[in-house]
Length: 459
Image (tube, rainbow, N blue to C red):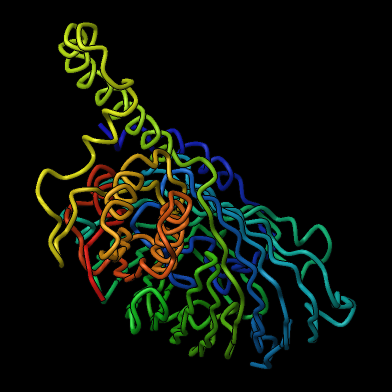
């Protein structure tokens, strides 16, 4: 049933390529960067993004001889000799199974021979606008196997400025992305079909092509440093592995540094092999990638959960209070407000090293305390037992940065101090995602792992 929803998308995008003219068109996609941050550099990931995730990439890309064609008598014409570009990409995940990326290359500098002697090469300009929707078909066994369809298309915005700044036509390249994700290693495979008009420029013959891309990503330092390697290859459908204008291989890789501020710093290099028209001899890149969840539905669900729990707790207390009302009327004892505080004190003495039953849970990537009642109960125990100290242990789920554990511990400590506990009686231990209480990947499991726990200590 899920596959049926993709047919209209394919039909619409095929219209762009149904009436291609005979004008020369370069492959403006092949050396572009990837607008999806869960992918690598030019290999697309198959795992859908988090719902409501918005991101922005800014990547500088220098490449040597990105467009070289064969001229008369076998002479090579360097249409573009060197090029420095900045790829600006934005993406948004509408739902878990569908996200959309848009990328626009800004050419900062380029030189070369141009298409011919009468064609002066533009030194700078805007390249082809690229639209990259991704539809996830399935994700199984906690992301161990996933598959997506990516229908990449470009608009000829660059050629409106200059013929060497982009393709002269709309281009279309559907791809299948397969992938696997584990704790330490991710892998991805892209199989694509590139629709190109049948044409000849000088002695370079171009036609539709088939290609693949492979990537391996190693989490060298968890949540801090990733190292990736990639292999790209393409060949002509009409004459596979015999068309010098299209047969190519490109290999390379890079690193990704992750920071607590949702900003990744990436850098790397690629080398091209073969005589294909639009494969640079080499390219180096460096840039930043930023993302945040602007419409996190799980946050709203968490708030509702807190409200429901609070409402249920009040409903449980009401029958008890109603049972005590007749006795309270006869005896006319202390005010009702004193009862909850007394109930918070354990019936038995608190032991050193004991884990208290009180826990505080948080929304995704947040240190906001929706209800401080559990912290206030711990503060009451400490104010009645002056010899005791407390150790706060802060946790995160596996999708969060460890810095959120520190923020949560500080927020809980501030509430304890506000309720009369001296700062020197509070210790903090940061656990992060190392000790999950739930191993699932659902939001209820993640809520259980985003927690702060309390342990009684004496030193």
